[in-house]
Amino acid sequence: MEGVKLSFTEDALSGIAKRAIERKTGARGLRSIMENILLGTMFDLPGLEGVEEVVINREVSESKANPVYVYGKGKSEPTEQSA
Image (tube, rainbow, N blue to C red; front, side, top):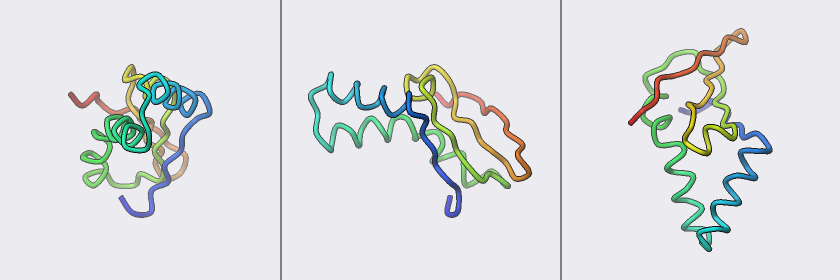
């Protein structure tokens, strides 16, 4: 996982902030939201070779899609949903 860039789109950040505000949570609540979003990636990433960046967009932050893994040389592939 070291050396892999983690990126969030503006709409993902807005959605995450909105969820935290709706829950009326502080830092611990925000941490829980982030862990839920990144859980599958934390398990999948060590077994993947060539991933340079993980992109979290609005759909990913809403659990409607998988993160986008950007591989070396600009190749990106969607991943299977972890349940």
